[in-house]
Amino acid sequence: MTKVQLQKGFTLIELMIVVAIIGILAAVALPAYQDYTVRAKVSELILAGSSYRTAISEKFQTDNDTANAGSGLSFNTVGKVSGGSVSNAGVIVLNGSTASTSIGQAVTITITPTYNTGTGTITWVCTGTPAKYMPATCR
Image (cartoon, rainbow, N blue to C red; front, side, top):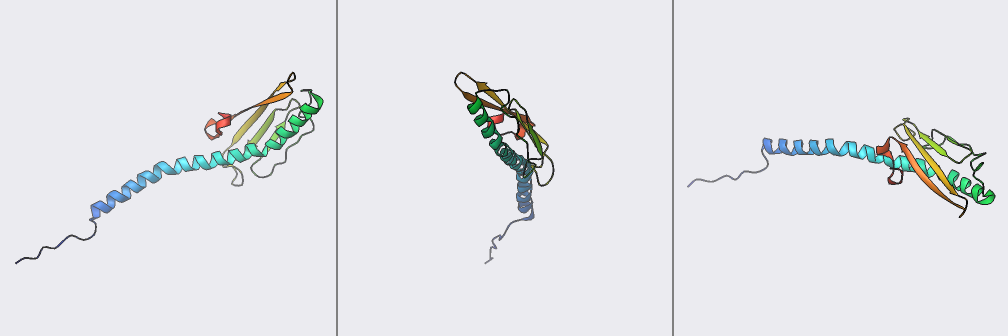
C-alpha cells in the first residue's frame, strides 16, 4: 500500500505570477492616483479664489458697473496659492507652483466674469492649464 502525498502551499511559478500581476496593477494605479491628488489640490486653489469672486460680485451689485469690479483686490500667497492677480474688470488669475507646499504641478487658472447689467447677474467661466488637472467646471 502506497501513501499519496498531497501538495501543500504554492509553487514558485504561481507566486511569481501573483507578484507580476500586483506589479502591473501598481504601475497603472500610481500615475492615476498622482493625477487625482493634484486635481484635488487644484480644487483647493479654486476655492482660495472664491473670496475674490464674492468681493467682485458684491462690488458689481453695489455699483452696477463693470469698470472697477476688481479694483483694490490683491492676493496673499498662502496655502496652495503661489501667486495671482485680479484685474479691474474682475478677471481672477490663480497660480499654483511645483513646490512641495503647493499643488505639485505648475498650474494657472483664469476665472473670467461675464456681466449682465440688465439683470444684475454675473456668470463665471473657468479655464486653466494644464487641462488634465482642472476640475470638471474648468474643462
